[in-house]
Image (cartoon, rainbow, N blue to C red; front, side, top):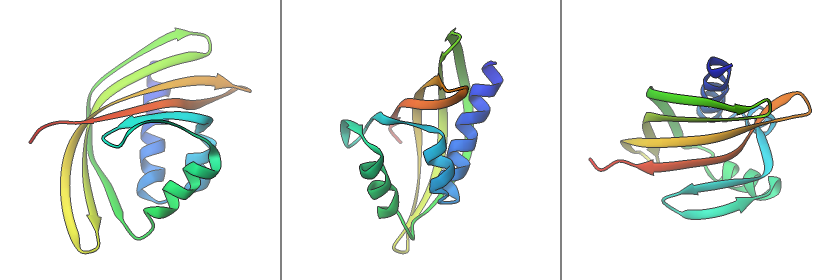
Length: 124
């Protein structure tokens, strides 16, 4: 089960790389909670779609996922934490960053969906 949750997290990142909103939507519980460098917010599906679409034309690449930890809390809730290294390209400018991420996954109608995701950028 722990591997299944990590596999779902990787599938989510792959969909972000491929700008595949249908897959991202199918893996997200709405409203979801997102916390990162832009603050904390609860995001409904239309707002999530707007944020997702605002990244159109930008490139994201997951370079690595490491230091993974996951726990199955119960039959219908799991948490995962890991270090991710990302490469971004937007408007001709490229950068890389490392973040520590956490996600909370819940089972909803026999499918696992992400209810909360956090990202904390590590200092370079």
